[in-house]
Image 1 (cartoon, rainbow, N blue to C red):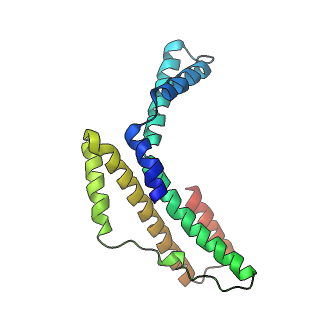
Image 2: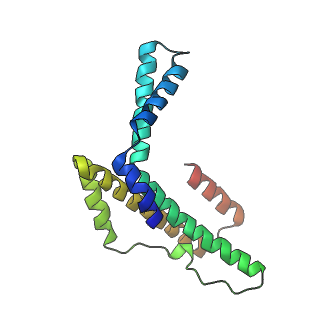
Image 3: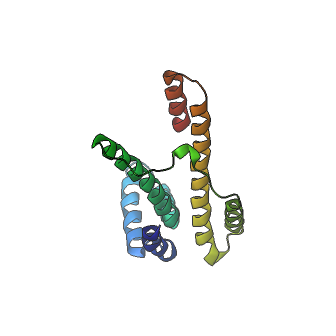
Length: 169
């Protein structure tokens, strides 16, 4: 989380440097001009710049969710390796027990409301908090599905098919 803040907030608040955006714009325009008119290529390259700004505007949320997910994966991998080495792994709570505190919904709702207002300086911070909370609630929803799948007596093949459909859609 500290690394997410250290790398994500400067990216969110400072944005992508103008020279980098200009490089991306020129590169995109040179690609698009080969199969469309110059005006359409300029519009398409502006759309590419808009997408880059939007993606990097949510830098903290992406770093935060990745750090949470990678920490959990590290715990699971370390426990697996320790069991292979005949050592007792540190107890990590199973994924199916993951849940957010009840009042965390207010953080999500307030940040979502601020995103809807699109007020200048608070917009990017609210967007990142909203995306991080939405990602955590997505993890919680997946944990609920895992919990109920583990309680039911569904065979291996239907379970695999369910998860394939779940992640594909």
